[in-house]
Image (cartoon, rainbow, N blue to C red; front, side):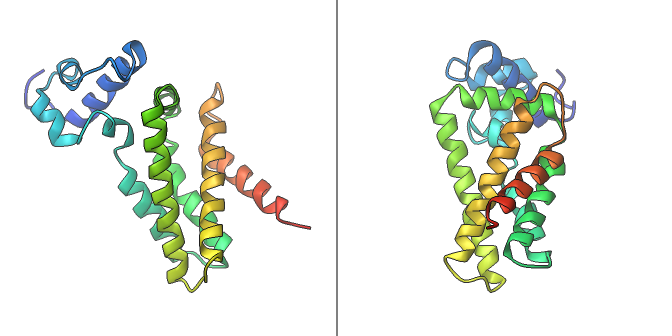
Length: 185
């Protein structure tokens, strides 16, 4: 591919997914990803710190989106967490097929599962901090944030496991409603 062609990051992401799915994450090198995308390894490293980050790029944007929505929400702590969950669905729920492939790669590799858990823990900590800034005391802020991440995890898993795109937003709302119902006497 010519150097001037756009969306190198998108091409790298797609090339990585193809290689991870066909050869496995461990067996795929950065050089192979770059070659498939028609760029150099140097270009790869301009976009991603390492081959794992191809799968996790955008985590900061996701966190910023959710924390911003939480900060601007009205209502109590769980309403704010619900607003944060709603805010992430357009970002994460836009490509069901890609998300399914991505999750299959992550599920097949212990190192990637660990990386995903670390990213989820950081997201939980950011939500808890956002709740504390809203005046929610501990341990309530951490409980609400962890509950939200639990909802997020279950809803995302149900969405990617579905053969057809059932809509991440619908899955998120359903899981959130179920969680709130469980808390009722």
